[in-house]
Image (cartoon, rainbow over all chains, first blue to last red; front, side, top):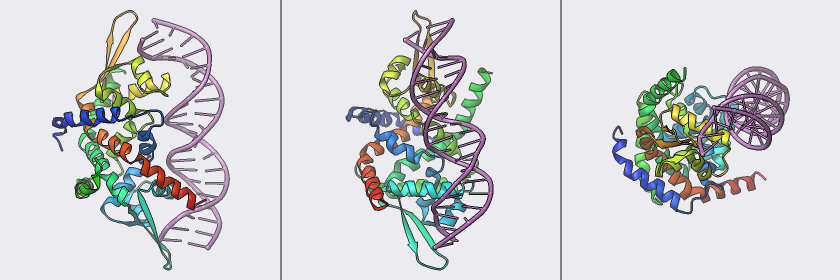
Length: 137
Length: 137
DNA sequence: CAGCATCCGCGTTGATACTG
DNA sequence: CAGTATCAACGCGGATGCTG
């Protein structure tokens, strides 16, 4: 994954084809879709669910600093967009399991690649920031 | 790009390897990097710059609904993270050109794939939302 | 266990006006 | 042309307490 630089032509191609395919930035599908998965928590929840289904409590433990409120809300948003499904088991005490839908798994293909990039290049970004802040005092 | 569903194993692999590679959700590189590129405008600006360098005014026209303030601010943030570079030409009137850095181009590999997914699957997401809102009244 | 309801601060965004 | 400065509105997200 360190050789992403060698794949630049592909990226330019995709970008160009996106721009050409009647891509209108006004009623923007990019924002409409990405705004959801780019919230503070969505990508982390999707990442956790990509390995296996999780119950509410397990998710809360898997995504350490999330509050109950945000977990509930983000799960609802992700379900609304069709990325995850909710399965209630009428046990006592009740248990609810969340899992990726087919569309959610399909989304994880490019999303996990992006997450992988973030993990690989995080250090470089940090360095770039420090350098920038240094110059601008 | 319609056959992304067939590539699920790859996604699960990447996700799993990400999770295993000492991935700590607390000091999260994902959020640290993604928060920037997932702002309301960043992805659109990067997309515009991925085809060719743009001047400030050209960018403002390429990303229709952006305000001057947000364009300036987002450009500064992207430059700070090392994704774009700023080139000032001492002409009269002054002109400033923005272009992707090597790291920015590298980022566009996975990012443009994600954008492509968004474009391809936007309709499905909209349908999922309508269905959800219908049931929940 | 898995939520919902409420309150509230603070950051992000937008509108507007001004400048080198 | 390419910004900066200021103000106001909005909503995300956190903290807390309560429920089936």
